[in-house]
Length: 413
Ligand SMILES: [Fe+2]
Ligand SMILES: [Fe+2]
Image (cartoon, rainbow, N blue to C red; front, top):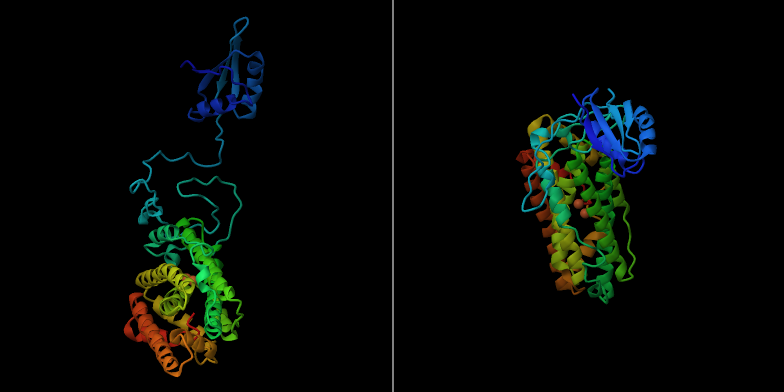
């Protein structure tokens, strides 16, 4: 078989000719030959040593006087990468009106049930070269992490980003009466404190997730990013009136026990379903009774993010219980363990109850305060009712849902 001809033109080694040669040799079997035609004598002289260094061999050289020169190379037997040959090219993922969604990168059946704990950062579709250092991931099982709509939720998270500096009408928060600003500042500080907890939980799992589940990494990263913005927006709201508040020890104790839960599904129940679920009702209440447009916007935007976080939790826990019914007892155990550490907490901090009451009353008039106190009591009841509904949606029966709701931290998160 006569060798394939490759016109080097003006290309030189180190100036692009090596790329042309690599592309030509890559697709050829070992032993096949290519004849490189070059007008340059020095390139012709360099080609044999280049071939040798690249695992190939120069088998003949000839020149007509004054050029061009022809150097025949034989492809060597070595692969350039320590891996099996790449699989066949296949059709790329579908587009939705020009958009490439994460959910369309692979089918649910292609998500591996088990991932290699030692595997490295191999992007979807790539073939890992051998010889890389081994990692030791701890979250290597799909069913311990997954939610069927995780990719769609990530998509919503990307589309729903907002800016805590620019998307809040901050000017509107200035100039509230002092009693009201004190109440708002204390409530905002309480929320910001809890948002830290909501940030550290997913952040704590993120770097344990096997890179074979990029959908989960995207989801957890979006969750962490959302919570960082919640810390930001509620801290800013507490600061804008210049009124300092307390970061309460009871809240700290509650969040400490939340971070103690090192099982991903246990944490999803405690944080996403119970904690963030309860916060949905709190944020709605604050949106309704906010004395200014900045507080209202902060509560509304955070609520929009929390809906996603809660949705993930319900979806994950429901799938987790459905794939392994024994998990019900394990999840209840996680809630009982946490409640066991919170026995000295009897209720929401009085500072918080007062802050919420003043916000709902909007004044210190006795009649208004009585109404505010009633609204806060109703809020607590709404929280409990909705908690039970969410637990039922997550797959618990009525008795377990009631039990889990009763065990939930008085700190709400
Ligand atoms: Fe949050
Ligand atoms: Fe959240």
